Length: 175
Image (cartoon, rainbow, N blue to C red; front, top):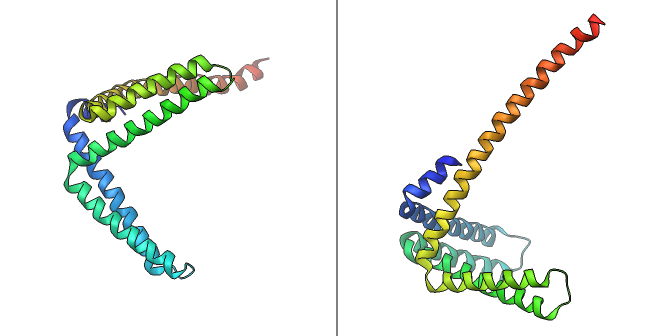
């Protein structure tokens, strides 16, 4: 975790490119699976198999395009995420205004924050991704450090428990 966090902080542009390529590769793999299902799916109807082939071909083409055009892939990720945040924020604000539920005020505040974050992501997708990567990197660094501390504490506790188990028969025998 710590190593990935450091890599994201040190090489944000390269990390963004890797993410773009991985997204493109995932789309290509998904398309290949749909193509396979379209050509081998005996239980499916002819129309369903044809749809799988069309979807698979489109996915492979889109995936290859995403791999070749990193900037567009990253823009689309930020844009789609921003649109999702906008819709989620509007929904939360609507629920906070119309429904009689506990924590309406908190839901309304979260809705406004989600709406604001979504608008920023749609308007400035490039800066959004760099900020997102910086936040993810900071989280991974902190999480890695905390996991390390917990692992050392667990090791210390388990050694203490093991030595107590070894001493217990000796104490029982001495009584």
